[in-house]
Amino acid sequence: MGLDIRAYLETRRKEAVDLLCDLIRMPSTRGNEGPVIRYLYERFRGRADACDLVPTPESIVEDEDYSFPLEGVTYSDRPNLEVVRKGEGEGLSLVFNTHVDVVPPSPGQERAFDPEVRDGVVYGRGACDAKGQAVALYLALSALHDLDIRLKGDVTLHIVIEEECGGNGSLAMARRGCKADGAVVLEPSDLVLLPSVRGAVWFDVVCTGRAGHSGRAGDVVSALKKAVQAMDILERYHDRLLAASKGHPLFDRYANPMPITFGVMRAGDWPATAPNRAEFKGVFGFLSNVTRGEVQREMRDAVVREGDEWLREHFELSFLYRHDGNEIPVDHPLVKAAEAACWEAGREPKVGAMPASCDAWLYNNQLKIPTLVMGPGSLGYAHTNEEQIGVDDLLKGAEILVRLIASWCNQKKPGECGRPY
Image (cartoon, rainbow, N blue to C red; front, side, top):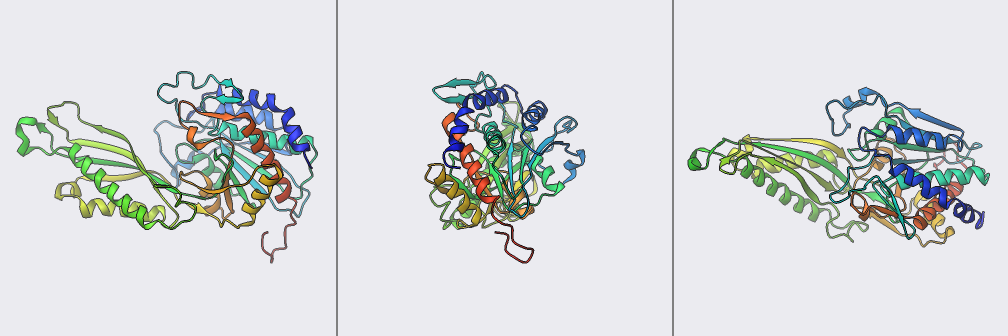
């Protein structure tokens, strides 16, 4: 293939920028992803052997792994997109996943859905997380099609909704079933290969008290103070778990790869009245040495064990979103194939760990498909008012994807009694 792939992608530079800008202009926050999915359907369907809008069943809300239920949310006009490039047979298969939903605009981001292109960089909500990833997949599939790159194994793309609120789009695709010899989930990683991804639970704590006037301090119990006590207890549990999680070679480069974040607090309506209810919400990260079930149980046990008598009897802890971490060895054949693709594309490969959660665990842990995370753009710009992606980085990411596909999917698939690589 030589430099043909690189030269081809360079001819698609303007198309890539225009496509990404079109996607950014569609404000695909949760509940509004339908137009983006249908737009991509029209773009992809001439580039593959199959391109299907996949409805999400309303029954998905009853799944034990469904995240962040919202009253009134339906899936009547928000399908996922599945794109398939068929191989000629007997080769390894590969499935890709990325998402088109975005978080709401950040404070000060007045033109979140009005993209700007400056000095070879595209700015706007979704530029790197993750509409740029969808563009990289489009470029890769276009290169396979237009350069007539023959494959033995199948390539499948899952472009999904509702990743940002916990992965419900990928959950729906996983429940349909998917078989592949490898999976790549595209998230902004600066093209670093991430075989290890931390888990996370989003939690909701409600503390109740006994409301009263500030002049009756002996008769009142401030739910707000009890909530602060509960926050302190959860932070101490986090610190103990962080210490117990040291020793992972890919995560130890971070001072705190599994932070606890308190993002929402609601309590009271008058400065001189102790509130009878306080609620706080946040996210608790953890590494693969523990499971989401263990973390949920230990969070609750910590409050019961360390809280005062009132708090122990007057708090409720629930979970909105529950992701396990996932991991494959750094010398796994999929990682090695991705490293080789980076070298072929003229980029020195780097291997790291992802100090955030994503949909990779559904493919790796539940579908039992070895899964790698990677993608152009920087996670540091995601969810910020300066969200961006460099066009050169986007094209380089697409080139690496093409080379990975061509290498992986042309490896001969062994018989049923052989190893899958």
